[in-house]
Structures are given as C-alpha cells and as structure tokens.
Image (cartoon, rainbow, N blue to C red; front, side, top):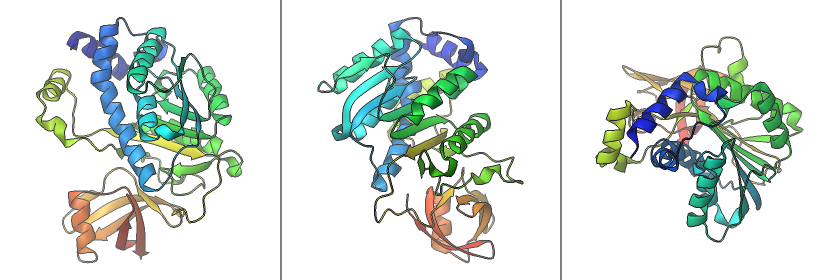
Length: 321
C-alpha cells in the first residue's frame, strides 16, 4: 500500500486542489492504492444507492453505460455488477488517460464479456461520481448537455453542504415541469426541492452509506483509518437518480417520505428531518406514540418511510428502505 501517495491524495481532496489540476495520478501504484481504499469507500455509497433501487424494483434500461469522471472505475463497475443483463457496453471518461486505462483493465477482469471503451461520453445510462468539486462552470455545462441526452442518470457525490446544494441546483434544472426527467431517488416527489424553501437554508440533502461490518475486524482498514485519520463509521453522500421513462404501473411512489441525515435523539423523543411532497419538515417522534418505531430509529434508522402524521408528530411509520 502506498501510504505516502494516499496521504497526498487526501490532502489534495480536502483542499479542493484537485479542482484546478489536470491529472493528479502519478503512477499505477497510486491508482491501485486509491482503488483499494478511497474508491472502495465510494463503492459503499454506490452499494447503498443501488440496494434501495433494487428494493423498489427499479433498474436501468438496456444500453451503453457511461462512467463519467471514472477515476479508477468503481462506480461503473458497481452499476454493471448490479445489473449485468442491462449492460450493452461500458464507456469510461476521465481527464486522466492513466485513470481510464486502469479502469478499463479492472473492468475487463471483472466483466470479460463486456465491450469497454475509453474516452467516450455518449450513452443511455450516465453514471457520475464525485465530479462537482472538480468541474469548471464550462465543464459542468458540457456535462449537463450530455446528461440531457441520456435516458437515466445515476449521480453520487460527497455529502457536504456545498456539494449537496450544487446537486440540488442541477436537479431543479433537469426536472423543469417534467420535460426532461422524473425523480427516482432520493427525492420522494418531482416538485421543487423543499430545502429551497425559506427556513431550510441551514439544511442540505445528505444521507449515509451502509458500511460493511467486516471492515471493523480488518487490520488493513484499521491501519488505513489511523494513518489517514479517516472515520470508517460515517460516510455521508448526496445523490440523484433521474429517469426519462414513464412510471410503471403499481410503482410505490405515492406518499413517500425521505429522512434527511440522521434522526436526532433526545430523552423520550426524536426529531426527524423529513422530505415529502408537502415540503421538508422537522417531525417529532415520541416514544409513547410509536415505541417500536422509536426503538428502530435508535438501533437502525431507515431512509424511506410512509408516515402517519398528526399535529406535526409521527404517529406511525412503515419502513420502505
């Protein structure tokens, strides 16, 4: 493991220096170390998003998949692995030729049956991962134009306030009166984002990846955490899944609510920042009103629910994911 290179990369990412660099990969060894660590953590974000989509019965159309800003290619590999029957071709695009070549080699090993191209941007399914901090305004407009020609968009970013707000702005552009796409996730509706309403300026749309429990018994991940000062327990993300296709009959999309962030726990009650078609609201969940749901929120809160709300309080809830 190239710890020196990983430390240098982490410092660059935290300082946003990568936004002005053309290619920060210096060697295949550096790419390999990154793919095994930081990229794998990004992979857990994708696993969490994909798990929900599968739970809800959603899948991309059959077609070409574009992994835009691919880096080592973890996002594209996760999507193909989740829906191999839908993948006709994998196309890799990154400003770094070394990264695209690395990503192609990794994908060829995992999917020997799948045609793979590099430096190609046209496709049916746009897979976009961790690019907003690295795009100029001109590059972002180029990306939006590509997205407008796709059938489906799966977009995952860090769960920071700045990046989340940028992704919300992109969502608003792409959902104009339903002319372009419909929202699949995390949005439980296709109306204006409730976080843009007065009073919600301090909030941002972020969620948390499910971390494999096995890593906490792995000495390699323990060393990674200590050396690079990375908290393995918490991986915030922002994401957006959009689809041009019409909603299938029976799709469970009505009256859904999305928990933003984590519930905040107090003595005898929780506060739950929840997004639904009526807007973003801070609901109260009292232990005495719904003891089973209250215990679930303490132990393993979900993300997507059907709530029963009375006077600003959650009286009951059915977990969807």
